Image (cartoon, rainbow, N blue to C red; front, side, top):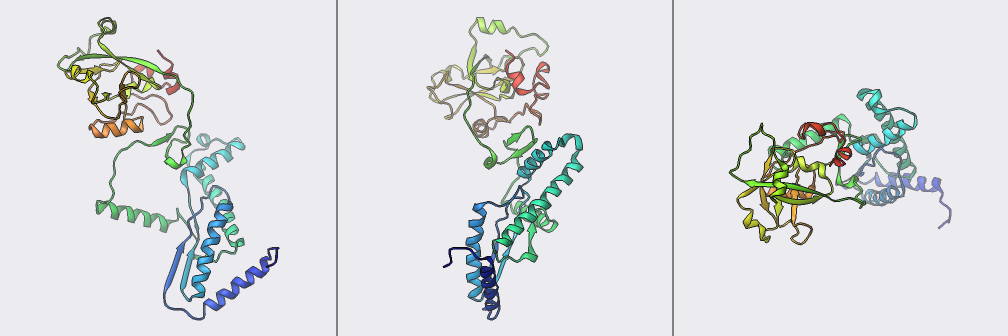
Length: 333
């Protein structure tokens, strides 16, 4: 074997295989849908390896006489592509919010055409034996309609359902992102300790009367819960203890008052709580924590969202906190 790669020799051989394989069809079909690369740039060595392996199988099947389709395509990768396009525009001093939705969408399509052509050209230069005339893009009308039809069919067969659930939200892009697009890392933090007044379940508070919070403190009528995100207390729907916690029986007839509000929340028992960690109490905020979301589902608790799409606090919080950035609200004692 020649140590140097001779593209002409390889291309001639592949053309010869095409001629030979087209002579005797055995009447059977073999299809590969090329896993569509994202139009976020160009291909890398991983794509080259993946495509090479598929190419080997495709050529082998052709030589055996199969009627082969290897369909190429590219994927819109919506959020990832949006992020790449935004960064590219920022280098030119162009801001998405200033040019408006329609203009930004047109910029994304311009990027798609450029990246899409680069990717298909790279695949062709690799010598991939794709059916180029049938190249597809995941946002093509035919593809979109097929996806919609498939989802409706699955929904009508009750194989999928629609419901609210917690997602990873990007306050900059202002969209949900998948778990695969989230890089989790540990950061130094700070614990805040919140005193939650406890009152009898049958005790009612006058909604127009001022609450004497000092009275609860003086009489030691409160539970202390530590958190790294105190601003989420307005989204609390319960305080949880471990089922083995001896305090549970004593608190059976009590409920909790969310500080700075007149909102009562229950005291619940759940194995999620570590009996030996901290105060052994956990504030349950299903709208802003994945673990709390699962606890909330187990106890039929309704999540409360306290954030706007840009990460500021919404109308679910006291007025003095509304429209504050979550990090700014965190610093208010």
